[in-house]
Length: 247
Image 1 (cartoon, rainbow, N blue to C red):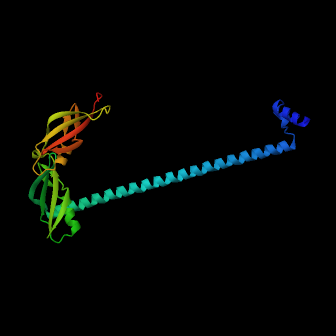
Image 2: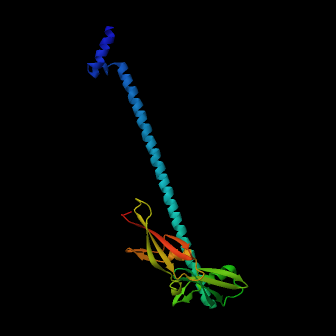
Image 3: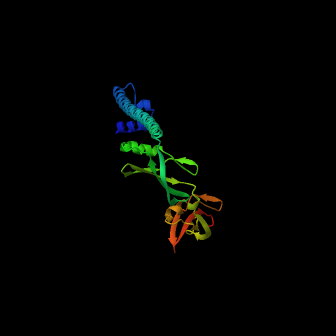
């Protein structure tokens, strides 16, 4: 009983060195074991961090290598495109190609009309790739501006047609007329709905395309087209939702 009380007093009231005397072989052994465990745990943590750092370095180097390869591929692709364009232009000039049978078609979007034409002086012995190359390299002058075709089509029997979507066509201009405030979209939304009626839709024109591409200006703001479109009673309407603190 006296031993137990003494040990308790040693742990609670006496200095630590009195209870854990380094001169005691058992104490020294216990301390060495604890230090050994701590040292081993530290070495494990250091080794783990080194593994993570090595993996990060490997991943960074792999990513950098991929970026260099992609950049080289991009440069090579651009070089090939330029070389092909040069060859196509030389062949076009050599053959004296030009566009004939130019035709205008319906309006496609706001201010834009479709044009088509037939490539003339095209030798019958040219293969598919060279025919399309000649089409891509031959410009058509419209409104004083030389424009390359948007697409080419092989019509058979040596006939190649080009297609353009030409901008600044005044007959293809739609416009917004009367203006109507539809009210808040919902209470607390901070949004108000505005409606416009669209006029001058060309015959055969896609009302959705024209509604989405006809510019609008109101409340000091500019829009490239309506945010939403709908038709009612043969009319086309555009809708916008604008910020309004009163909503």
